[in-house]
Length: 199
Image (cartoon, rainbow, N blue to C red; front, top):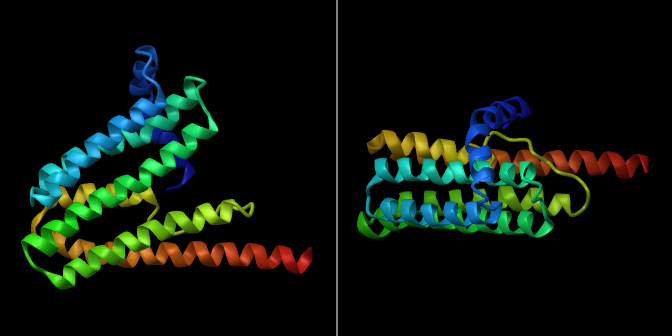
């Protein structure tokens, strides 16, 4: 997601962020609330209630979008908070894709779609891992069409549409997620290779 889009999102969410700060709700509490809402969404996915799952996931995404802003505006930024938020993000993705996998794999017995969901989850985790590992070396690759906010928006929109549209959209998501992994890997390789050649 580009910086202009992020700034627009911050402006839209500013009243909510200010209200949370005024109520003295800490960013870690917002993160936990988002996790609990995500678990509800995952349950709805597992139950095959795609539209409701998408609506609830949008609420969870709201928490995910504002916890960092609450930390920054409320002067509560901490290394533990960043670590906690990132760790919870990974749990949330496992819950969501796990719910989808349960419904299509266990309830509907669809092995092809189950494999698609599994590989999409793998790609989603690797997208985050590649960036985190690169950041440990001093660079933060962020290219590719499907970062975490993008994946959330994609799932929310297509699960609310539901039906066969959601089914086939997951095949598209699988492709976009791995395009993102490859792009970030390539981006990091190009930068590091250039630095080593001129270092």
